[in-house]
Image (cartoon, rainbow, N blue to C red; front, side, top):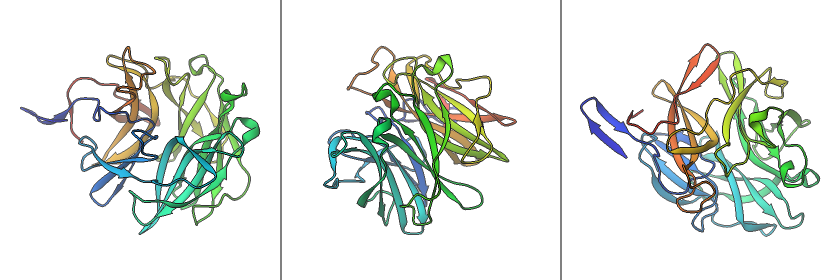
Length: 307
């Protein structure tokens, strides 16, 4: 909600009170398009906003699943603009044949879809399945796909992976590279939800860790030499943890808007971890930089200046 104060426009988290798990946003023209994990009977719910604060439901980006996928477990979608009028959706779906989660990709002419022709990209059924796809385009124009093998579903390690994407956005090329796995006490038994962000010359890998339905869930980052690694974890993690009315904040995505950097993420209301109502709500906080180190100014639950 946008508020008018003596100092101008302000907002208070959460910026969307409904269940908004695993959010990612892309700006096209003057509009932000946000997609998130299935909710309310929609496979890939879409929200739109002019300012990252006021969000309006805008339908289902993936109204029909292919014959090879089961409904109800359509997770962590992300969208990328491949060219004007050509958008790709990367999303986790339930693969009927393997009984595990797989990552698929589909195309549309607009960011809100509808996306058609969902095809498998990554499955890794022998490693628990594959989830949490995130596309990245580096400054040289090359594209990559990041994801997590769902090892915690089968008692294995969880690794974050990266692999080059072809220009069509639907084909992986080269070999997959392991970037990192759970190794620090704060991470518990799982790392997930990777995304890459280039800040100047530095390439940063952000990720969430620990059990998603607890207050221990949090966001951290690593420093990488290239989109294919190697990556190492600096001191100072995690950078976003439970605070105030936000419990288990994580599965974030980062955007730039009006010369500033912002983090969109989900969090449970404190004391309602794991609930279906209201579920994981949408939060927004600013990120500033201490050299190459990201500083997340949140979770905030007091009035903040609108972007």
